[in-house]
Length: 220
Image (tube, rainbow, N blue to C red; front, top):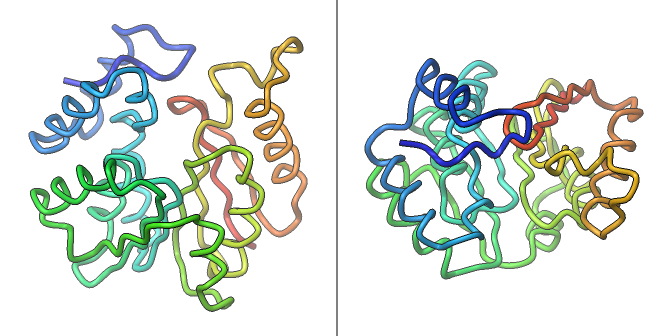
């Protein structure tokens, strides 16, 4: 029913238990998971189902009406966020691929949330910079190229309302953040991001061991 566990500390059996004892993926989400899995190894870019359920719940819990996502891929995370918004809510989804997001568009339509999602194709730094620099968003999700995590964060923060939340994916990078022998560009970028937000006085920060690591940042 769900992808193999992305969280490095979970076995398949406990992962299946976690998914089954939360809100599980419905038929549309299961179909999207299966189609994305057929892409091969790159399917690991799709968020895990328990993370999707958490993101829907969080969007509802904070009463989010306007959200923004950096990195859409085949649309699972955006579908989950959009389902957590009210019917007149809006999610701006940012990605550079028309191919992957074509799949996303099909599933947004199937799920009945396409009217809540505004897809912007192009570099997300440019999309963000083009938006008014005022606090218009309640929720943001960052899950794109790791080298730009800090840039995305700095562009989003002034556009987030006080009390708004930023979610950031892959902050544990399959445990490599604590591997002293790991020094590739992605690991270095994630470590730099993690260090910066942990000491940023503008936000409250909590890193959770959900999937491949998910950081929650609440704007003070």
